[in-house]
Length: 332
Image 1 (cartoon, rainbow, N blue to C red):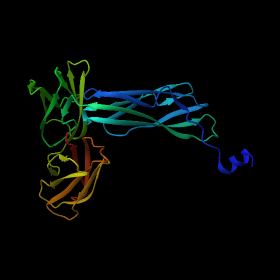
Image 2 (cartoon, rainbow, N blue to C red):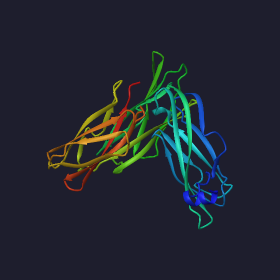
Image 3 (spheres, helix red, strand yellow):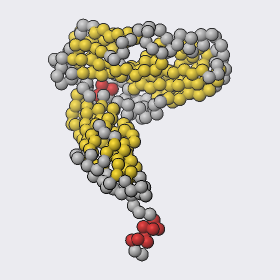
C-alpha cells in the first residue's frame, strides 16, 4: 500500500510545531534563597511555514508563578520571549519545579489549510533555602468598614536586610514600617497594614512591595486579596476563612457561619471556589444561620500556602450572593 493511499485512509500527520526554542526548556537554578523572585525566560522563534502564530493562552502550574509573553502574534522569523516569575516567599524550603505552558495556534496563509494548536512548556527547578520570609506570605481580607493586619518580615542571616519602604498601588491602603528587632540571631520587622473605610466595594487584588537595602533581595512582594462588602450585605463569621494544616494532614477545613443583618431566613443554593484545592460543603436547609465548611486539599495546593475566593449563592434571599476570601498555610 503506497503512502498516498495511507494518507487518504488515515489522514495526513500534523505539521511540526512552528515555534522553536532558542535554549533549554527545563532550567535548573540550583540552590536559591527565598525572598527575591526567581525568573527564567525562553525565546521562541516562528520557524514554520507561511502563516501566523497566535498565542491563545499563557498558563502556570500554580498561583505562585506569573507567566508572561512579549508578543502574541508572530509571522515567520518573528520571536517571542516566554518568562516565568516565581514568588519564592510563598514557597516552603526544599526542591521545587515550577512549570508554565504557552498555548498557541498556527493558521496557514493558505485558506484551504487547517489551523493547528500547539503548546510549549518551560520548567524551572530550584532547591530553596529559607533565609528571608514574610508572614503571612499571602493575605486575604474581608471587611464592610476597615481592616488592620500586621505582616512580619523575618531574616535569619548574620547581616539582615532593612526595610526602607512599604508601598502599594492603592491609595486606600496605608502601610507603616515599625523598627526592626533582633533576638537570638533572628531579625523581625513588623509592617502594619490599614485598609481605610473608603476602600471601594468589590473584590480587588493588590500587591504589597517592600523595598530593602539588600542588593541581592531588593524587593519583597506579598499578594493581597481584599473583599470590601456593602454594610447591608450578608455577614460571614469569620470574615476570612483561615485553614491551618497540622503535620501529616492530607486535608484541613474550617467552619464559616453566615447571618443576615435583617435577621431573615437563609438558604444556600450553591457554593464554589476559584482554586482547585478548595472545596465547599454547606447545609441546604433554611435557617437564621447559613453554615459552610471550607476544605483545602494539601496535594492540590502543592503543599504551598495560598488564598482564593469562595462564591456562595443563596436561594433565600433569592438572588443574593456572598464572596468569601480563603487563606491556608502549612507548618514550617
